Length: 448
Ligand code: C2E
Ligand code: MG
Ligand code: MG
Image (cartoon, rainbow, N blue to C red; front, top):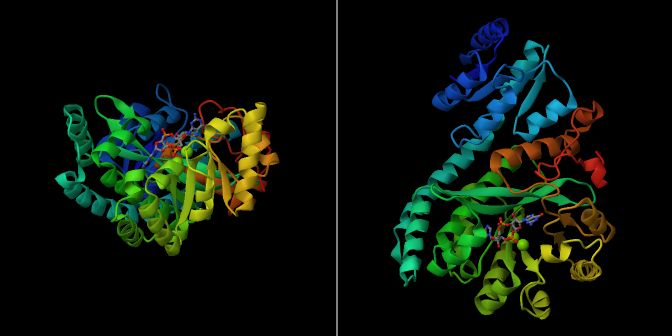
């Protein structure tokens, strides 16, 4: 029996909801305030939470914020019940990761419909993911004990290797997702998967810090494989839930590219997760390709033959010659953020960015601008006909549940959205901290 937690300070509403939901065969637990609600959510892990917005002490937003930061409760579907129907409140709820927002008074049918839709979506999303992740965890345990994946020699490397192995075995890695947005329309058409290491002592450690060390110790192979598997499983479930078009970009390091097992592993991951090769893009830097030109060339051709797309990451920062662009026939080219930075006012960056866009297009590549932080940079890129943007202006990399709420909001604008948009309910707002107050229409993107 599915379990629903109702957090509501008004006794009459609480009782009415309890009776209604129990009569529809849900198991219902109730909390009379936000503090008790958070405790019950963490101890009971319900299948769905209905929560009032306005409550004394801890309001609904505070409850949601607390739960979304807790890995046990971060993905529980959360529906706000509120007497306020304002756009600002709605936006605040969605930014925090709410799944739906019902304005009182609502009908029984509206409530039951919203609950059923969130529960069935959760099933579509979590089932394949759970299966794939269980398989990944089993494999990670093998890899974490496999001493052939390392070349470490110095004591520092050994210590780090031990830390990384522990991180692998204890599941301290997480995949964050950063949207990739079609510049012409403002639609999210994919995401880059970016690994994060949540160390119990040091908090979140950036990949820039540990990837080079993981490369040195060889542990990048199991870490990279885990990232690929998680990101592919997550993407397959987003596609199954109707978020389309959607492509996931995953980074590959030099060491992974020279791994003779790479292609077989990727094929296995696609089979396990059911993701179509066309929905996967692999990013690699020009240096990583050039360092392993022979092996990488063969591997790249095999991956491309499967239908997987290949992107050159951080374009312009490596030491490769342009000849390799011709040799490897990449699908996308990502302009490094150092060139995108202030391209609207810095004459040199403007010249480089414009030239790279022209070069990419003339070689039939999709051009992606990385690290877009300002409206002015975006306007410049739009003028230069750059295809896709990624950057804090739209959103920072976020954990899957928060990214999913971005997808939900964006989908309403572009998918089944026409009815919703015409009622004027959801102006979309980028989630980034810095740009919270701006919205898409001020970026030159209009709702369809
Ligand atoms: P990258 O692949 O070039 O990823 C883009 C980096 O730029 C990310 O840093 C992202 O958070 C950051 N970024 C995105 N938008 C903005 C912006 O508007 N402003 C600024 N200042 N930064 C922005 P992150 O996540 O720290 O990753 C750093 C690098 O670590 C990545 O660079 C990639 O090379 C590597 N990396 C991350 N995850 C993986 C992974 O799973 N496998 C491998 N092999 N490498 C990874
Ligand atoms: Mg990348
Ligand atoms: Mg990059």
